Length: 269
Length: 270
Image (cartoon, rainbow over all chains, first blue to last red; front, side):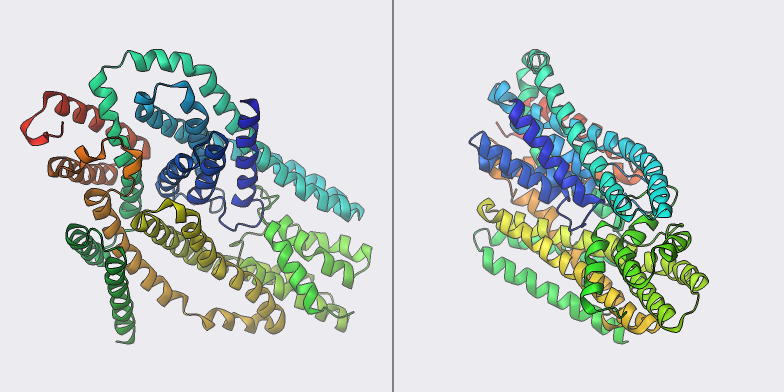
């Protein structure tokens, strides 16, 4: 188990590097990092598809819920990458400790843990940025001494801090869930059966919450019409063309082209 | 000593680490200094580079991808200064100060407010629509390819234009109509958001994650789910707190459990 926890921490740390420290190829986005992490850990426990599906589900939630909390200037938004990594790792590595009938409550617990770890990640970000002030002063010292190799090395130290942040938070939360599993099991056993069953609908709400947040943030008067068009088109497609994936997709594509042309026309006017 | 294309490319590669030492005091300044250091080493003596520290290690903040344009201009300035033996220190500070703000505004609105959300929504829509997780990793690569095509075009294109044309290089940003693209992407994103929401209610894209999915296909549940989503939408509109959203979801789960237990007429899903 320790190997699996460390592996989860390592992968989480590597994805964290892409978030701000290096590259910014968007590999750290939750739908990418969480899906890959879920797939890797799922493969280790012999259930790659389960890891993939839940990884993507958590990815949607954490990516969308903080999508518009941007790290512009000095602001430190919650860490979506750590949040989704903690949530999916806790689920995949902890799932074997619970009776399968409790899976949906456990999914909810993992979601909340990921949410909390995202805020802790943001708090650590502030510490790292302060720590970077000291490192940058040391860098300036070496620059002024003409020791440019040391100056470059200190840049790497900044990267190392980001890695350690994600690695530590991920493994601490994973150990926490592993230690707490007897207590959680005891609590779960004492929850009335009908509530345990009712928790199944959490799967329906996880992606919906993300979409609700996005719509709320970017909706404008001019976009209500397009949103409505999407809802009506979706309602028709999913009511009548249940098995026509490609045909339905072509209809959607057709509407996208009409929207495009319409915007171009308006621009010309 | 002339600057070759490969030097510009190397500087471009170094901009991948522009935020490594991001801090509250100088923000991206150390990333800029790190990126341009090989050029300075090529052009100046050690003593001169040390003097340049005052300009390069002082406050700098911009959008990390478009900061490459400023770097391109700075390389050009340094090259001209060496060729004409002039002191360009004040010019460096003024170029940094005048361009970092506008480029940050342009980059933030294009990359963070438009391209990233739009690409994410399109990718999520594609994975949910095709609902075949054997292709999920392939569909996710669409997100990476689409976003990074723009990312790399602007990172390497702008550094090369900045170097080639200096301040005139701003015409690089007119080559592609960012404004029009943003408008189109915004409309398409909303259209796909509408379809995604309907898809969640009418044809749930993750059926294998829910046991006895058939009982959730009843119209009674779909109505309950649809109303709950609208309710959550207004809860979030009221107070923009994701925590409140999660707590409300928990309450909805309890309400659903009780309704299901009592087997009420409008929720016959047992």
